[in-house]
Image (cartoon, rainbow, N blue to C red; front, side, top):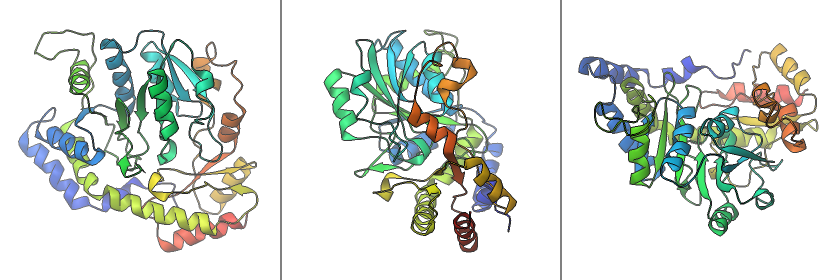
Length: 367
């Protein structure tokens, strides 16, 4: 049996006719940027997340950068300010902070959840700390009431990197609606993925939404008048149309992911492997199903030999990347380094067949 990590062709085949209709509608309109499809998706995604405003942008990294630049332009933050961020996040979160002229302060995750350890945050706060960037990594809710209390106590802005967690919940409220601004990615492999790059920001602040739309349009809110040094970052009409179709099925697809994850957790029994510890499945949308294994590379090779393709998220942590060797390389982060050294992602998506799920479990258990 051959099981890909993720077949986008298979995922896209689910609603092929609806995608074709949406794309033909865009072609017939002759309008490819900042049109009706974008406005419609922004409205529907706003309702889905539970915020007042949504602005479509070109990709998730732009969404993160624009969120931070917006706070700077509004005077809520200043160049050089510190932003607390989980140490084991994907590099894009750190890139956004440094691209905006801010300083990342890396905090270790909780090994049982892979999310930022809220018990460690206060010890990293200085007089330069102005924000916390939560990352709902792997499609798991990182928000806690303790983090909200810390933000209130120290007057910190709360940002969310919701790139991997579309539809994730906390006490009936969706991630992407907790912070001042949240950034979203619609990279094709995401639970809500476009047919190319795409992203968005969500917020309850009209001032922030208007400013981000301006910053993403070369810094212009009026044609040929530029109030800010902006950039070109817009969600195109074709991807907006596709995303609006996918959005209708997102909760259904996420529910299938949860069901498969539960089967994995209940049936994978191998003392060499550590599984995710889940107390509330609604706080997870399982964009990634991460396991830990000390012999990770050996396990990956074994699974590949048996026809199961896996992924590593991510082999090198941000503080060990060459681009930050003069900034972060002196950090000692044993929990983060253990995760990056041992993490392996099993195939998990709404298209997995029952026999494929059983085969993955059997094969992993026989390692």
